[in-house]
Image: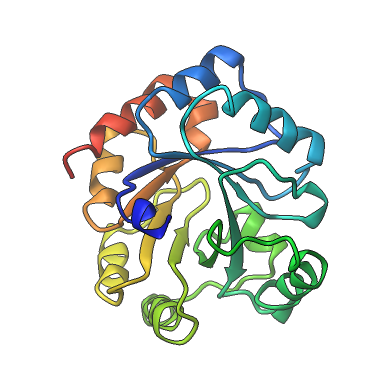
Length: 229
């Protein structure tokens, strides 16, 4: 699968705690996006996850569960992403929760389907930033985290998460320069074609989430915007 993931340019991210109509979900799945991620910060329930899974499964697009709490883990997804929040001030979000999950699920985990993401959350106002007790890193911190993700932890993905606000393309470029094998995912504040293309110039793949719920038509257009970038 890692070879397949190397070719991805665009992913949509759906929040199980938010409403989306069947028509809109069908259009997302048939838009040409490379995959659909299901994940959120709070109010993520098993019922919400199962509802999205059953509706996405009507289509052929790969679907991924990004695990935010163990109560909402379910079989049926193509892939599972496990975040490690690298700029958290609490070991809990880097190791303890993952340790707990391994103890509980290691006998049924398929490591061909499971991937750990090195997360760096870069919006101080974001729920995820506060929930995981992050500190705001500077440029040198972020590039060092990216270097660690690849060379210390050998993680397949480094995820720059601006969570609702548009980030700094120069920093994304600097982070990408640190990575040779680890993929760089960018998410946050992409609301139009220009922003999608600008971030895709440096990131291996962009994640579009919030704009699905704020301006659906513009969110759909971000797929075409990165086709030739």
